[in-house]
Image (cartoon, rainbow, N blue to C red; front, top):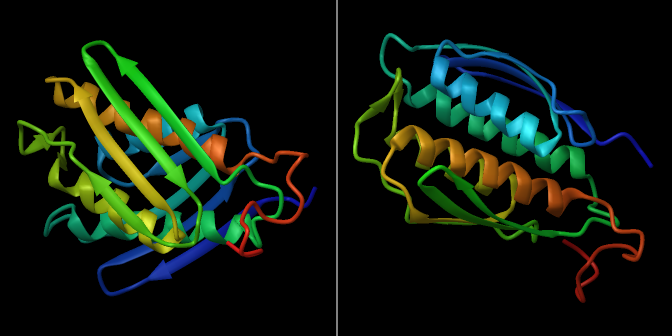
Length: 196
């Protein structure tokens, strides 16, 4: 099997980002975004998806967290799409119902090439650590649209914002890991169209 890795760079007047993703890694992560809670979520994503992730970035955090978080979503989505190549043999679909204490999140992924993001996840506070909670939606939105994935996040329970956010990243990691995994029974791509 070919190595399913990608290194993506994005440089704008607002952010400078270099990211390397290995879909067949061991859950290793090295990242320092300058936003502690966001680093924690990216580490969780890598660990629970068994992806290797390296991220070097800087941005205009003196303004707020918007540009950096959204642009990391764009770059990570680009890396997922690039590492998948033609999507030969992948399972395509993935889902996870994940509990964390009182929080319960349902995540479903379809690597169809048709981007769509649906989320009913809400937060009761404006920030978790230094991360603006409204940026969690923007991160997943950017990632899903650039990657060409259909992504659904549904909050079934939870009142602790830290638990809810962590549950989202864990559930997404598990669902994406399932969707990108190779199924030896799949010939070509898993679509009657013959293309994803």
